[in-house]
Image (cartoon, rainbow, N blue to C red; front, side, top):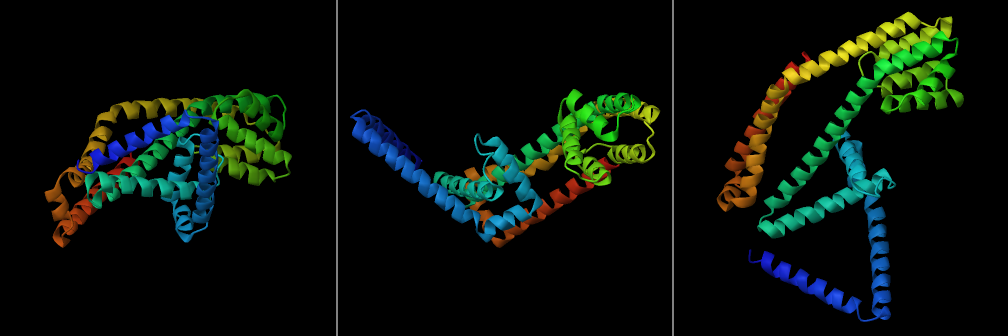
Length: 312
């Protein structure tokens, strides 16, 4: 609190002085606008310089880092137009400023590590939630996609025409995948390659079977109408079973999340508010105990995920 109060008073004085000076006349406002533009120009130069460093390249080379950068670019308004390198550099700058702010606020260097870990966890959790939501949306659209394909190919259309028909008449992420496949076919991409890309982009069960059916239909000219209609019925039943399984296992999955996240949350909170815990954590024995606890928690999480993978 000895530092928080002076910082708050200083910020209030700065805001009041800026408000008073901003109302004096146009010269001050013009000088303030030039200063803001100059500051933005220097910040953009620094961002581009940081984007060319090895640290940014290493962050983008890891799957977790790439996912966090992509999610941060989606979350920040107006940042989607930034290249991946500059988005990663901006994320590193935000994480550094956040860590320094927490270090000053809680008077310990461990607070910065807690803030960075919390930021990484938040971005990774948002990305996982978004991907799972998109997967459920695609899975819900697949029965309609199968039926639309059946109608299009049963009426004598070619594979390219049927794929374009699906992209035009369906809505959602699945329709966007078929639209991209239609554009690839128009641009001269071989049918087998375009179908393989389609199967890779559709993150749903049965995508490989659909790709094989489309290739067979293209080579033999068979519409495979009955196969597509049966696939639509099976996709509907699979969606019903998955929703039922989610409802039945909701309490168990919530318990797993609480059990796995509670030790991490307790360590973070105690690191921020307890000086005794901070001093104990900086000792070799304290760091060893926390490391062993994190390893055991991670091992339990891996085992639970492996068991759930056999059910889901």
